Length: 431
Image (cartoon, rainbow, N blue to C red):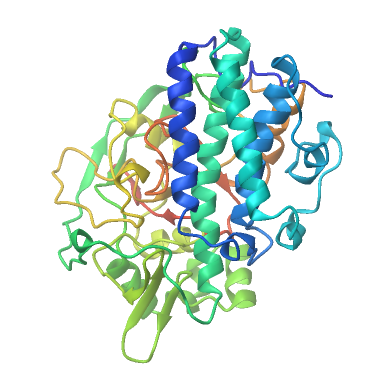
């Protein structure tokens, strides 16, 4: 089989096997906690081609450890089921065949119970591997597998939200706690100035990073301003009421074609009953909270709103330069809020919500940094082959782990995508 090359994903490993075993247990248990509210029937649903059933996510993340690590690096390892090598491959062409993505919801076999047995089998073997003083290269691959699983943790939540929204009963994934009462208090918006100049962008050589975050390089920025917080539902509602979806002059050409073709009139999961707006979230349907950040908008919508606002979207280098010296803290998965929260009052000196709450669209096309080259092998398919027709998002969401996100992290989606936890922070050129 093809060997997964790890050099493009992280530098020489910095954690020992004991620490990594603890992290392995934490990540794998978090995935199970996310899946716990789901019935086997829930875990089977694939509501659109871009989504995957939760059962498939649970199996594919397990497949990653078995295929790339255990089968090659643990002596005497017994493959759970040889047929899973093809069945749960996502898109790694160098590993051979894989099912069409749109068909994942048809996999009634293996059963949900069998998938959970698969996870237990692989977890037990991974514990043996990590307790047996594995090589630094093996540890590096394990860390890559854990970050891969954290990506799928967020996808389980985005995909089940869409699946529940398509059902007539509109079930809630989780009840909203009493401490999550909605608020109408909107934090004032300030503009935070930045001097620009030559800045270093990208991940340093030390520590884990995906290949698309490297190589580190210099970027020249003009003076710019960033909004102190994310755009709110109330501000976006003003855009709608000003006929924002009916004015072609606000939209990129392909965006306007998409609006007309899809009939967009509001963000995904918004509904209007003739009197008031409501929004479907992981907590079910509730009246629209005007103070909360607007989410589930495409790049096209974010760009049109920015144009309507007399502003623009930030470039990813601007965002990173503003966030690079910040500690990773915010409304992330560890809070278990499971929705974006209204911003607290901000000052004239610092932006809030840079990490967590929502992924923030940038105006930057998803391309390789100067000098970027995918390495040979399966890992070269992880990021590089998607560098076409996509835009970069930064900062993570309420479904992202604090141990997964960092200032250099580059998420990416096509400009029409809306089902992810996506929002917008405005930017301006410094006057």
